[in-house]
Length: 102
Image (tube, rainbow, N blue to C red; front, side):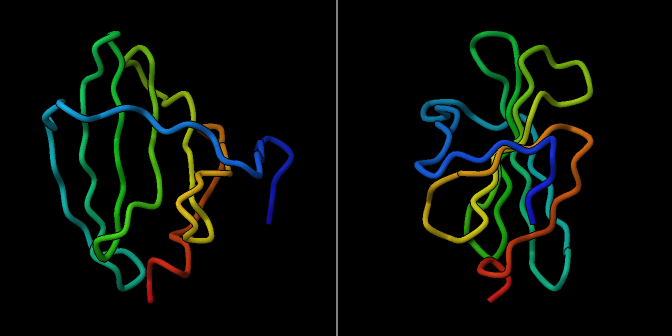
């Protein structure tokens, strides 16, 4: 389901470049039966990014340009293609995609 505030791009949105950056925080939670790992990174431009993975599969990136809540947006790979085609606003609700839970 796509909401009015959500943006969709078939070819996917570019994901943040995190190579060479060490996470400043890593947390693990069990959500909907999946072990979800949240890795948080400071970006060189003064923002931060959280990379979300479940059962070893990256499914979302939460991006914030100024480190002040709320986040700017969340990129979601809803079908497991590796394309983060859904861009949600901070107030949008999302669920862990079914392909992550398998």
